[in-house]
Image 1 (cartoon, one colour):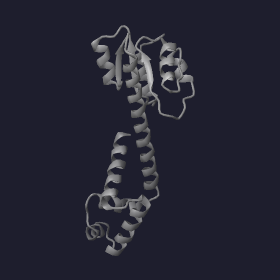
Image 2: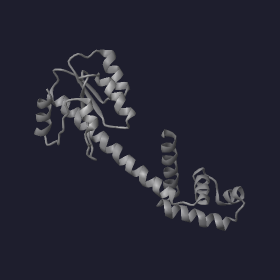
Image 3: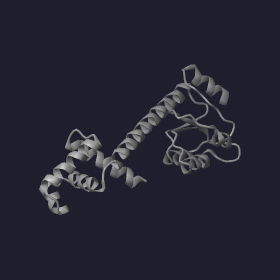
Image 4: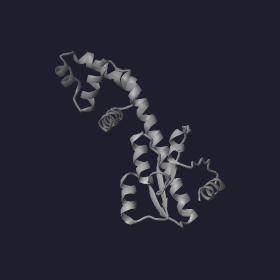
Length: 192
């Protein structure tokens, strides 16, 4: 089955690596490229669902397509609730597997792009002084310069200087950009 899936994926131009066991996968060096994991429910030594949990706990975030010859509804529900993108019963159509893998690769590309964008935003945010961070938070909350000046016991001119520095360092072209950046950073912090 593994060789058949490898052949199918290579036939449409995908780079493929296969592993005989979950342990082999965990020991292997993984390329820093978008990927999708095709995982059988029945693995040597443990179930695919247990391995899915281990991957999540190990901070490995690959989209997973489950395949099985022995699946049932509760098993597929558990896999999907834990983040699997597809659950295919053997025998499955080649096109169904290819469609699931293509969707998985696209999801992983999107996740990687989002992570890179958040890392860049975080780096920009780290370049702000503590006072600029305060000003950014208040600007993003919709406060006016004179209100921020009053809140921080500073002059309005000083707030305008800090605000300009925040806009420049965060590479925000407009106030809505800055608010979006602040929201993204806040959302990322609450997820961590």
